[in-house]
Image (cartoon, rainbow, N blue to C red):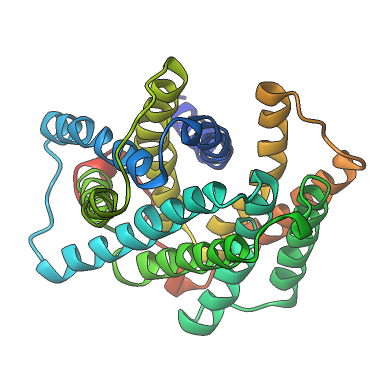
Length: 314
């Protein structure tokens, strides 16, 4: 009975991981919108990247996590950190500064599951099927319909649109690079290296281009703490677990739930409306995710089941 109970708990935990990730990840849009009003993009991102570093070090010390002894692997981890935490998320903050609205940024960034999945089929040799493509198409259509009601692209600057598209491809590149080279990196030491590798260039850009003025407030502090602790130590660790435990199409499909979740959080925090046909659009997204996640991964993309040692060893 004890063995069966543990197995049931493991199944429930595996099913809850994607949902927990989506909620935490989507909250980042809200926290960023709140925090960027009090300082400049490079300054805000420097604070956001530096704050969790002592926390990572503390966790690494407590659980005695292993450091990579392979310089090439460390280099790959640094590249991913710069692509995702450095260019992508810093670029999104700059896009907000240039006049982009949150809805349009969400629309563009929510397209990355489809791009990442197609690129994984082309470059990583992941399994292709019409069922997979149909699921991705349903999810993409649902995302476009949800966010299209919240965003008016014509009111956004061309420079902001181009920058957000570059952020989209930076995210896709980071995901594929992670899956290809360091899918089994240690989650704690790897995340620390990623934050440090992104912090160095962002901090340098802050010194060169910004006055480093910060209008301190409880809202700003709360935003930084939420992004640093909950996002860095929570959602991104969950995200790397999802990448490690399945193919790219499966792990990326959960991002389709980001825009509707962001809409719900915006309603809760900013009293923004849902838009028409929200439930119908959400149904398309859920249907697409169910199709993609039930798509059988090829043997080459399958990884050993994760256990409690995942945070300690690479």
